[in-house]
Structures are given as C-alpha cells and as structure tokens.
Amino acid sequence: MRRHVYNFKFKEDTSEAAIQEIIDAFEAEYNSNTGMTHFSMGQNISESKRPKRFNWIMTMDFETYESFREYEDSPKHQDIKNLLHPVLDDIMGTDYDIESTT
Image (cartoon, rainbow, N blue to C red; front, top):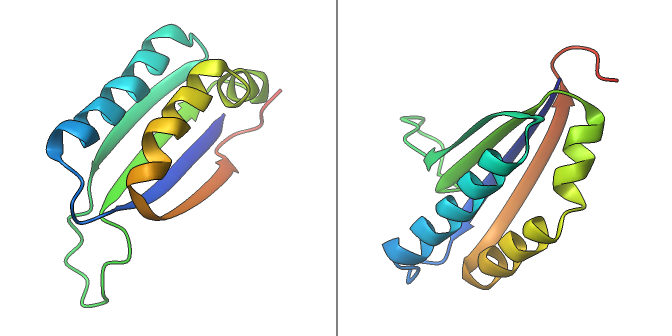
C-alpha cells in the first residue's frame, strides 16, 4: 500500500470557498479511483511549540503502486494542481509504502 501525504501552506488571503473547492476535487478523485482506499484533508491543529510551516495536510492511501500512478497521471490530478498552485505559498509531499506494493 502506498501512502501519499502532502502539506500545504495556503496564502493568507485564500478563501474558505477556494479551499473547499480543492477538497471537493480531491474527494471526487477519491470516489472515482477504486485503488484509492483512503482520503482525508484537514487543517493543521498541531500544538507543537515549533512554528507551523504548513496549515493544511492531505493524506491518501492507494492499494497498489499502479493505482497511485493512475492518480498521478490522470488529467483530474492536473486539474487539482491547477486549483492548488495559485493559492499556495508552500507545498511539501512525501510518499512511502505501508506494506509491500505490487
């Protein structure tokens, strides 16, 4: 299983409606990709004394590497990136395998 984690720092003037549109786009992809087994996105609520570099976190799990690639290579993924990038100050992504992937 592949875990796909992204941290986002939205620009201060990003509206709640714009963030909700992005969440809705991710959820639509989740609902259409049968290999995606989990999607969640929420605000960073860390109580750490360290400064918060990112204000939102998104996590996806994929059954296989192939289902992950299906997501990464899809036109819908490009559409999501087109929504995201204009409203971001920063972004950081991490992928790792939870279990073996085929």
